[in-house]
Image 1 (cartoon, rainbow, N blue to C red):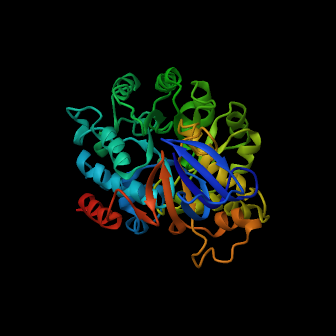
Image 2 (tube, rainbow, N blue to C red; image 1 turned 90 degrees about the vertical axis):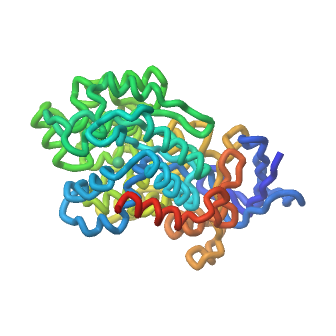
Image 3 (cartoon, rainbow, N blue to C red; image 1 turned 90 degrees about the horizontal axis):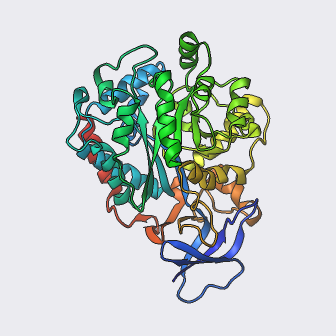
Length: 443
Ligand SMILES: [Zn+2]
């Protein structure tokens, strides 16, 4: 049994508890008690301890575009050309190195579980590797290297648009048809730190008659099914032109919605779509720092939540990796749009970044500080210039609205101390590995 003593810890609700003793047995939390003096043997956790953060939507290789993507301005589609240039340079070895460094950056930011929405499957021209899942397995190993959990959301990507074949670089994404995708994805192996889920890249990329095959694959495994939905207005217009209905309606008509499904972005959804997503219990993942970077727009997160869709957040293209920034942006973007304050409570936003995010990734036993849960937790220091002076009664508000990834001091995943006093215990030089692995894919 290992003991940790937190000055403050969030056990749920709208306030934090003081002097919290967390006892860990193996990979699980055995007991959690507040108002307890620290035992001599306990590891002290100064600051506020939260459940581990879940980054529910990631494309690890987009990390190489940070900064560079600010030159390819114009539209989402001009950004996509830049992104494709990096995808073109990926090999399984290069991707493992880049993902290892990116996931280590996530660990330093308090992320203990990542949902990797993965669509680069094959060699140039669509040629199969000898190991059909060479990329997927590299990502699973990269997460192990970085000491975090991963749900590999293997994405079906079959078309270059409605009625369009894949071309050029996109050939690396394709499996021919959904049955080919399912056969390959079925070969992915789970591990103690890794689970496998499904993704439909988008209704642009998976022809309507193939959607139900992907949905059935996820249903049979009781696995998560994630989909990019209505990130851009152009997708809605093209979908209506091809099918006479919205992307959300099309997904519903092919049994792709439901509580295991997660609509990523849901930026340009109308009232009928919101009703459909909510009524089916389909969940949502907002990625505000990417959505603003790509000029997508502001998704109606509050309306979706009222309709019945649980919220999670993700750093998606990794313009920044900071889940506090993602969480507060959900509220602050809504303030800009509505000219009113107070759509989301700080505790609701933290719940999205912890418990709900883990559920969206198929880890319902993580994301809570409670007996029996996986021992995944993160401590945010209160002695930085950003958070100094934070008051106990409003600590959650301070964290959500002024905290930063840089304030994360300790991270424990499955009982293992992955980040100790702000340093990654497994990856010695995270910045150096980021620099080298990015240069390798930009060269
Ligand atoms: Zn995405």
